Image (tube, rainbow, N blue to C red; front, side):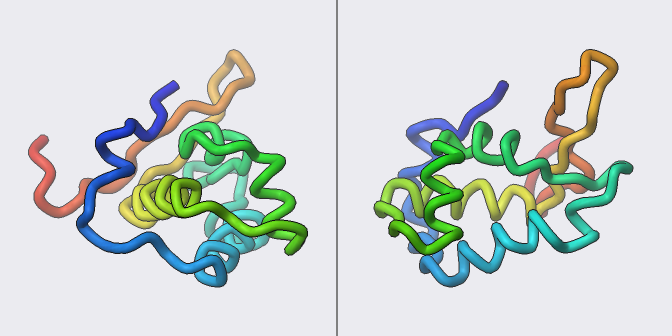
Length: 111
């Protein structure tokens, strides 16, 4: 599975999102129907955390406000959230695993 690489997470295009903004996005992934339906557009939480390269348990504690996030974790989650905003979704395959699927092309990407 692809994970956010070291060079991508350290790009200085923009500062990482704040904790409140990241928490809002993570809550949307869990509860908003846009991200939760069983069809083409889904963002499973475990697959998202694996893609971002962060511990899902640390993210669960963050959502429950038991702990904060380091700058590195915020940077990784920011890049992963931006990928979802650009159209990255996961689709369930016959092997019962989720695989990332790009639904929309980012502006500036070459096909």
